[in-house]
Structure formats: structure tokens, C-alpha cells
Image (cartoon, rainbow, N blue to C red; front, top):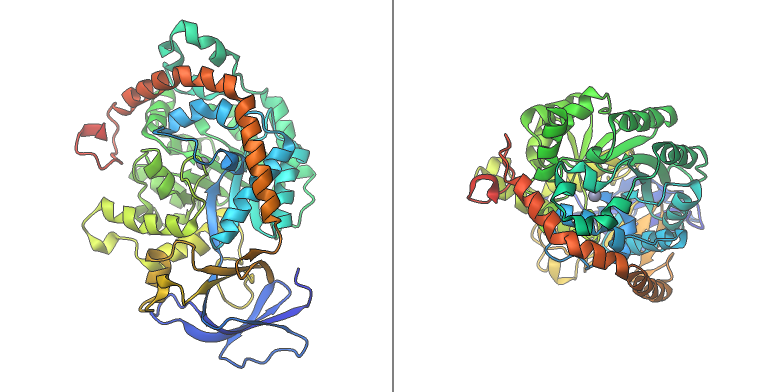
Length: 503
Ligand SMILES: [Zn+2]
């Protein structure tokens, strides 16, 4: 919390999404909430702390609708990996994480997001062998300490990747199967008990950091497990998040396993609802989209990740038009690779243009900015963030209008989405508190973070070298087998390739 109950920001220019020019305005903040936005010279209590914001454009904090903090120490490791090759590499990429590593990873992610104008995120984080209130609590503590808002959702599954893709294990030469056979999921009972303990023991202010549950990928879960997780979320009134039809392999595998699409299956299982968030939602047909909309569910659009992993193009505009609440996310450091919401917004606008020459269906800067703020807030379940307005959270990004991205200033909203890359972010306020102040972190010891992250990443790489050799040995088998699955016909097409199936 700020040291004084009132803060007034004077001299800034508030982004007005409908107008090319920002509006000169002062902002009065009480506690962590915006009390009033008014013309320069706004009345403020005498004791109010004053922040001068001349030459600063004030934006609502961006909200990252989908990321994974346990991958941040693995920044840059991925080569030409498909999603399935990334999952295959999982044991060495994210293996051996102790609880303090989970905390370190979350702090590293928080630092990058804050530095790039993001004030809240949805973090689906994996603790092995199963979630605990202590381990997930370390992640929550990292966000709490950084002063960032977050939904922290332990990643859950009762199956493993190699069993989830039909025929994959059989395709692996027997001499290489030994390592894979050892990869077993933790018992469902232990995982569910751990998830319950996370929800039961939650000790953080839910206005700032709150829990949710996240079955990783429905194909890695038994139906009973999915229903048990959904029941737990209802019992504790928390959100449910999962990756939905991210790759064509998942779409094809779901059809084979259930005889219907993944979204249809989740709907039949009673999992969809207003607290449901679908990450990616790439391989959806019109009926799937209608189901998400009818149930009041939300979707997290991650265009950077989808491009990086070759998963195709999600129909974000179609989902939004159909009534699905659409937010924007970066996904994680191993597949995006930056946690940069400015980049994610720009890519969301651009990929909508790859869909169609009909510019009436392109996502424009105002729509994309809405998705990355209020849309993502809806994915997280935070009601009063993502907008600069009275009674909303004082989560404010201060952008330097003298940065080249804004010279000359012709259309502020267009320039935030199409020109900004994070370099003009000067300060970031969350809940009325400056967490990043004129280029310096106020809540994170940055030098210490750099040293610890470098040291720990090196240690983990050494400790996981054996696993890396094992997984590298089967990487091309997994890759080729899954590309084969992606060649199978499917009733929607989400690649831009000019050959059938795009492969
Ligand atoms: Zn993800």
C-alpha cells in the first residue's frame, strides 16, 4: 500500500481509446483505488502525495491472460520446437525445480512483466510431484512481494504427455522407451489433495493475489479428474483454466478419444461456465465457439506463442463477436519468448489480418487494447482492473511521450498498439503504489535477481543434462509422429499454409 492514503497524479495525459489525442487530466487515488479523474488542477486533500507526470501518457495496466512462471528460467532454450516437442522436452526444461526456484521464476517473470507495462497475470504454474500450499505459496509470495496482481493456478494432471497422444509411445523405438516409461503422473488423489490444500490454506489478499486451478491439458486428464477439479473450483469459488485445442495434434487426438471436439467434451463434462478460461482456443469450430459463449466462458488469446510453436491462428475476432470474453496473453518464456504484452497486442492485431482481407473483421488498436486490459481482466476474474475510471484499481502505466515511439504523436491508441515495444515504459503503479519508478524497480532487487537467475539456471542445466540427453534422443521421433497426426484431415483449418492441412 502507498505510505499515504491519497495520491494525486498531476500533469499527465490519459489515454482516451476513442480519440487520437490523450486527455490532459489529473487522477486522484485513495488507497489503491482511483477516486476521481478530472481536468488539470483537480481538488485533492492537502496531505495527498503528488506525482508529476508531465510528458507522460497514462494507460491502464496491461493484463497478461496466460503465462507459466516455472518456465521463465528456461528463456531462450527452445529451438524449432512444436508444442509437442516442447512438452517432450519438459523433464529437462523445467525439471528439478525446488520451491525456491518456483519463487525465483515468478519474481523473474514479474520483473519482466512490470518492466513492460503489465500489472496482473494469470500464472498456471507446475509444482512437482504435486501442488502444495507451501510451494504454490512461494509463487504467490513472489507476486505479493513484487506488488503485482496475479491469479496463481497450480497446473494439474493425472496423465502424462506420452500417453495422451494416441500411438506416440508405440512409435518410439523400444531401446529409447525406458526413460519415457519412468515418467508417470502423480496419483490423482495426491494431486487433488494438494490442490485442495492450496485453496484451503490461501493466506494472500485475494484482491491482489488469488488462487485458481488449472488442469494443464484436458488430454492429460481423465474425465473423472477433470470433474473432480471442476467440483473443487466450485466448492472454493475459484476459476478454472486449461489449454484448449492449442495444437492441431490436440484437436485430432480429442476427436479420436472422445468422438467429439475437445470443447464439446468439456461442455458435456459440465466444466464450461463463467469461471472457465480457455487458453489458446485455436482449433475451435463454430459450435465450440458458441458453447464457450453460451456458458459465459472466457478465452486467452496468445498469438506470439501460437506463431512460435506453429499452432495456427486462433479466431479471436470471431470469438469476441460471438460473445466470448477474449483476453490476450504472452504465454511463457519458452514459447513466446518475451513476456511483453505490447508485443502480444501488436501480434493480435496483425494475425487478425492474416485471417481475411475483410478489414471489417480485423482487430484494430482500440479492440486489441480492450482485450489486453478489460478482456484479460475478465479471464482472471478481477472486476475492477484494466480501466482508468473512478472505483477502478489504480494500476497505471506511465509511458514517456518523448520516446521515439510517440514522436510525433498522431494517434495515441494506435501508437500504443503498433509502435510501443515496452521501451517507453517509465513507471508502473499497481494498487496506488509505484512498483517501477522512473526506470528502477521499487519492489524487486534487480541485481540480486539477475545473479540468482543466472546462477540457478546454470545449476539446473547441469543437473538436468542426463534428462536432456534422454529427451533429445526421442525429440525427432515425437516431432515427426505429431506432424503426421497434424496431417490428418480436420474439419476446421487454422494454418495459413497453401497445402491441405498446412503441412
Ligand atoms: Zn500455456
